[in-house]
Length: 302
Image (cartoon, rainbow, N blue to C red; front, side):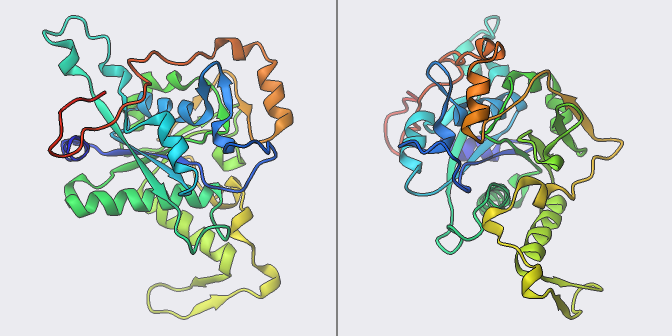
């Protein structure tokens, strides 16, 4: 019940999207690649969830396959605390001021598995699921904006906290490093709207199937020859999000340091770096396993 209350009472619904389902990397561990440790008792997917919390997301949607969902949920639980509402010691009842951000787990459809479930598609499918789920409750709680966070980009998640107002407005927001962003294939967070979603979706469909409409609604569909089509399963971020435009009004935030964690060599480089010593697991008041009480059960958040 509290999950729905949190969703319904949000005036500006910023939905955090964390793509986990995608092409396999070269780690070859018994666990999923998104569960690689980035510090003591701190996993890559957990860092992505913490960033969503610092960014001010009202809901978080983790897109993963059914077989990996139980272990990921065992680490993340049902909700994470909003850091901006923690440590308010001057409140009359500090414990009642805490804000819970619900985490939803989105399974990839069977027809998409191992066909087009790249990270880019996981972002789009997570946004679509978030919209449909919220819209079934009420059109007034449908996501206003989406904030995509990738587990394989390493930087401090708390740097976005001071920019929550820039993230939750009508303009775009892009993290950059050395002037590069998700447009260049970097695992750096960015926001997009429903209109942007349609553009990204059409771009993916065009490159994957070679079919697109010309001239507006009701006009014939053009088709590319087979040799010019691509397999969406292996699309890179720039293949889909490369068409994004950073406008003059959009906000760009340069991260002081960034590591790519999508291969073993880069992962070892990060582990041996001085920056890794700065990375610590957040306090239990922010990141800790919690479960929502079932409807009709005891109201115990822990």
